[in-house]
Structures are given as C-alpha cells and as structure tokens.
Image (tube, rainbow, N blue to C red; front, side, top):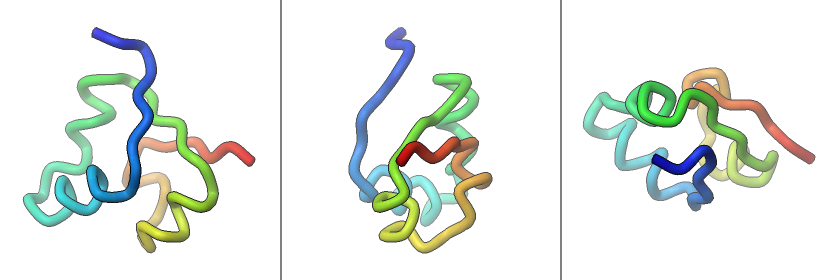
Length: 54
C-alpha cells in the first residue's frame, strides 16, 4: 500500500457523496493536500483526515 496518494477533488467529492470520506484516512492513515484542493472541495479539511500544505 502506498504511503502517499495524489488526488484531485473528484475523489473527495465521490467519497462524500456515498458517505465514505473517512475511508481514505482508514486506508492511508494521513491525507495531505493543498489549500487549493481544500478550497475547491468546499468542506472542512479535517473531514478528509487532512493536513494542508502550502
């Protein structure tokens, strides 16, 4: 299993729509994303299990 993933917003949106956003954190432990992805997603980054990077 990879230690890191790179994704656009579509992954977060799809998982939110099916009520499984927390699945990413369960599988990968920690999700790191950019402020731009968080802004486009339009949700609280903590729901992604996320840390934002500038």
